Amino acid sequence: AQKVTQAQTEISVVEKEDVTLDCVYETRDTTYYLFWYKQPPSGELVFLIRRNSFDEQNEISGRYSWNFQKSTSSFNFTITASQVVDSAVYFCAHTGGFKTIFGAGTRLFVKA
Amino acid sequence: EPEVTQTPSHQVTQMGQEVILRCVPISNHLYFYWYRQILGQKVEFLVSFYNNEISEKSEIFDDQFSVERPDGSNFTLKIRSTKLEDSAMYFCASSEGRVAPGELFFGEGSRLTVL
Image 1 (tube, each protein chain N blue to C red):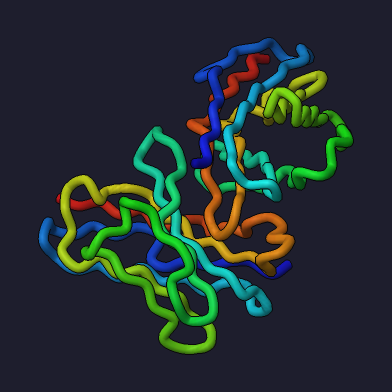
Image 2 (image 1 turned 135 degrees about the horizontal axis):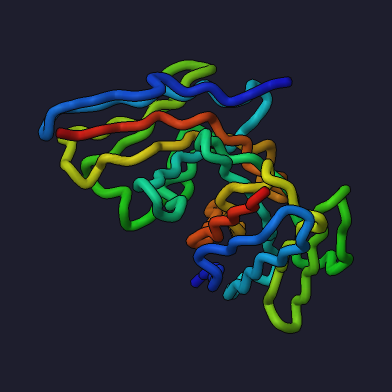
């Protein structure tokens, strides 16, 4: 069965600090996809990134970067030089078949 | 930019009443989903729908729930007899394909409050 674990419930940082959000998954699927979504205080879910199980290349997009390591079943997300606008709940998710399972989320507070 | 739209944005209902939540997925998407999020908790999968039938559902999606695509654009979630614990934000989502599903495009959610 699929399972996504985000062990960090809340993280608090000061603006301009780097922060890494951890995500560990369990799956029996040989082909699957991993995602990160952001949920700002307004409540909507905003797509950040998708990775498929065959693509272990790390990715950088501006201040965001993702480290996918299949050997440890982890898909961690780093925000460099955090900003107050990064304050949100971040969800890691796994898609296998027709179902996407979300982790419990990590609430990030970025203080000015 | 195409988007998933949901109505109503907030509905308050009495326990035992029927509720229908409506969604208009992105027009060229083929896969449709409902998720729910109880306040402060994780986003939970309810059901996926493809080719006019349910393709997968979770244990949450019991006989009180049903989904329908009554026409070419709408995708609805019906709760027959609401319970207090059905109070949550319900998100509709759609995606392009099965082989490479891409990201789920989420609507802004419908908040259901059951009194």
